[in-house]
Image (tube, rainbow, N blue to C red; front, side):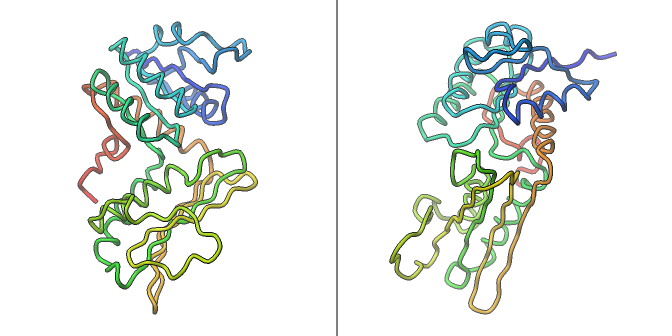
Length: 259
């Protein structure tokens, strides 16, 4: 019988960390071999980071951009461990550091680990390619719980990026993150974000294509946080079999170029 893949969970005291632990405890092909969190966290289930990495084949990390970046560097220095990153809110410099680390180890970084969301990305790109910017305005709507600290969400950015790729433009040249006051008429080709934070909303995303005479809405609703945890575990099981590289869930699910 094949031994279970050894997982370490970073950010283990957080909501997503706890969800990942629960998913792993229910599986026979993978197991929780170590849990760690921020330095100074007090919980008998935790070990220090070095001990956790020594015990694991793959680390799943839902923490903060800074902590994820530092973890990627430490894992890359070891060279013998795969890393799954579910943190969001990275800046360009942090992404560059993670991509550099991915030259030494396999790293799966995704703003969303849901199969449905990753299918949605392909549909959004197709719709944006087919519907002319001169006729259809694109707006990305997202809603999350009051504790989420970054906006727009990583998934919203992924959806906007898919729309921009469908239209063959660079997202940074057409994105509109917020509106307030006298904003003027909407520019042709703009891709906007609308954001809500409140209550315990797990994750709601919709991409609206609005023309003068019709509105097309492509959407996804997350009902349980465990769906993201299951996706992250599947990503880890996939990553341990891969060569070094920077991957995302489109790669894990075999959807790259198929939608």
